[in-house]
Image 1 (tube, rainbow, N blue to C red):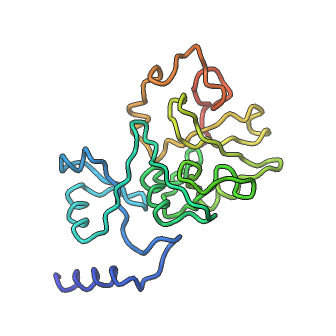
Image 2: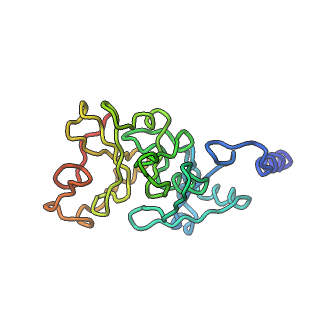
Image 3: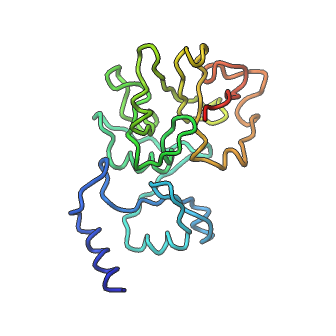
Length: 222
């Protein structure tokens, strides 16, 4: 048993297994510092599975470690580049931040996704971490400038969920094109929603992000 594990570990570390969407064939696991310090809870893999912190620590003893810093609102550190294709480091940050496709209600994991420019590269959109998001192959193809296409923007600091991706449906679905956020990969947002008043008062509104009074979201499609 130990010999088989050693052989498999050496095979993974050999670098001969190719890549998937720019990353090596390996397990990518993210966890919070709080759970790591406590030694309990669950970590999340790039395929959407959960791993106990105890198992994640055991696996990490043979791994390359990446430290990604997020602010209190979950926004990732700035990481930009001048090329169109997102770097492997940026994909790792997106895995930790978005966890999967950011399209409303989509549950496809990060390994099924492309790095999508919120503002299209052709229109001058930068390949910076705060201007990228994950979109699965199906939903990434829905974004465009013509009729019947979706658009993407980022929420501002005043929004209930700052730094997140808003998907705006075509006018035949919603004439106001109000933005939708995907909470499928962030169940804690449903169980423990952030305090609305921490960002702005109900009376001020955040029409830049949602097109409505306040930052409430319309009911998401199934």
